[in-house]
Image 1 (cartoon, rainbow, N blue to C red):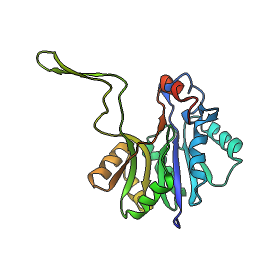
Image 2: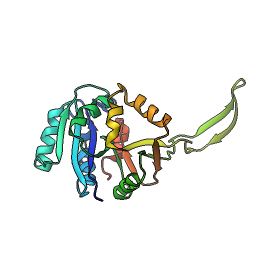
Image 3: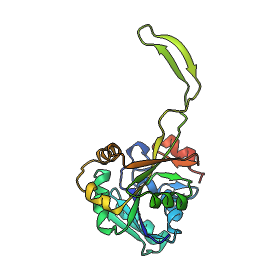
Image 4: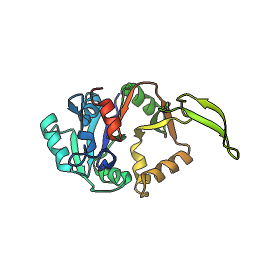
Length: 226
């Protein structure tokens, strides 16, 4: 693949729902299989020869992200750490834009998807003027009950059904020209809604395994995985 690609990992949130684990540590630096989760994310992309820059968009405890880069990656010149403070995702991307010179991918710092990135990126490169996002069908953890609203009479049960709409796993791929549009928004969700409304965002549904954590229970469940 001739064209280069820049990567943004979102690493700046406080991870309040993961307290006490994130009291003094950014969520992406929590240990999973004896390594910071962010190590797994970076190692998946850094080996791709066409990856130009990897931007770690930090905020909360950003110095620990810098220390992590120095220790784990020996200040590899591909890696850039920025500090946007406590802001919306869109602001982190806007701050990262000064380093973006290629098409780029935006990844959540708490989600690892075991997809073939080369094939995914190749698909994106072949689809002119479209952005991409990865999703997955999700089976909820509990059974559900269907009932008659006005009578509260149970009609049937479903045992841990798969929800209709795929969940958002991130791994967004964008043409660099979209940065002009990104600069006009104040909220990430509003930007995504506008992009979807323009019918310029495609979905790749994967059945590959993924790991994500947003609370202590989910974190304990993946600590020895990947």
